[in-house]
Image (cartoon, rainbow, N blue to C red):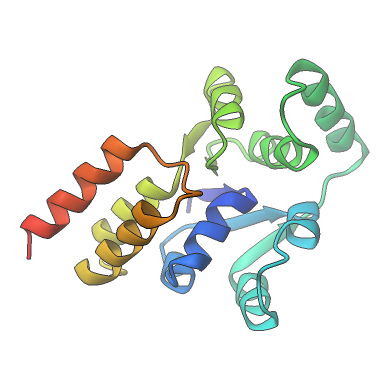
Length: 168
């Protein structure tokens, strides 16, 4: 089973749209770095954190892993420490998918040949694996579209919304 290593931004987006639970039902193994789980998910309720604990492996790094994070941050100083941890956890799990909404982290992962996707890919996976209804997927996309803080590519988001609206 493929591993998805998630950063905080994607989980927060999925939480906001109330599709976090169906996301965690996809046929993947889910991993989150412990520092992200402990530090970044402040908007998550106890119930949501319990759901993550149930469905995700919370991964720590050993000394070599932390050293690798330091090397990554020197190489790519625009990344946050949390991004560095997500990258190294993905790197330590060959064949894994890094799930992120951060362009800089995405660029680094692609340069190191780590497969990387964002929440629009998650919506596609929810359709492929029949884990969410058309209405659930459309609602999630519309919430992102209407959120002024959303950083998703507006053209791709608009195309996905139009496609789902036509398929009703």
